[in-house]
Image (cartoon, rainbow, N blue to C red; front, side, top):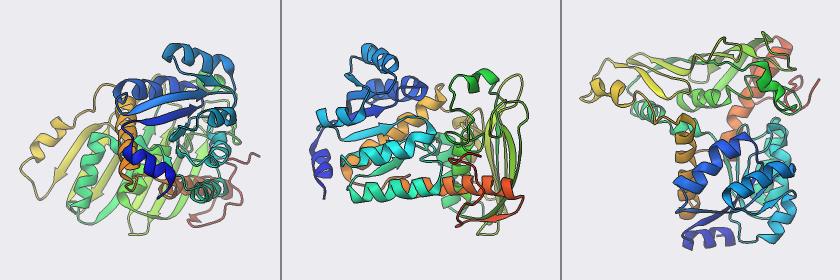
Length: 367
């Protein structure tokens, strides 16, 4: 058992540090950590290279701020967990840098942009005896948990199709807000960003993927990467999958949904962010089936906040009890490999079989 694990097992609270003070920090992580989980977590420091952003949150939450995370780590040896909440293209570099301090690391999605970077992150964390967790908060949505339960119980029988639809609206000002958005080097397009959670759910629920064939266009956004795409998947269990993803919906968001079809039943979870049970039908009915749609119609009003709350709460439990995490580095790598395969297929115009070495994929590399 490492020193970090030994200390966290007897600590009432875990000491967190946050690297990156952008929207995901200010709107999701900080409010949850300082309110919902304040009895279990202390935030001892935050860091961002943009001093104005870190100082603003420092003043708001009365937390020490830094512009250099090495200085932050040296001055706060009491830290147990570091959250990497920076730009997608910086996740790997920051995680690898921070792993040398032997603290557990939580990294936002996607964990990296290239498979080589993801492998380096996993290797470095293993070498330094720190655990790596990847944020996949939609797995904790109540309707998704109910769907997973039905799959694990075998209620679908043979699953033959899984479909996800991400039909969202992101106007040009969204991409223009930060220069890195929509670039190959730092972000990617709708597959790597907005649809990454949905791809993770599809793989988690239906099973490992054998191959993918994908197409994309840039419908409305003036960015390097795609804003619209489709992908056809073949699962190792013989099922087929369809992915429809776009940020070009106008005038507003339609849905983020997943449908599972099997020989004995069908379920669709819809809503803005796979948070609303829409269809729940099985041939072999159980007593509570008639109540499921109503009971799991929606998560609490703050869709994102609920998922992140459950995710972070579970990470606290996992660390304190030294349990297996739902999404560690290896599990987070799975959906990243699928995303890379999608981009490889788009560039080669060919079916790509997984467990491959990307050659034409632009994600994390650029033109």
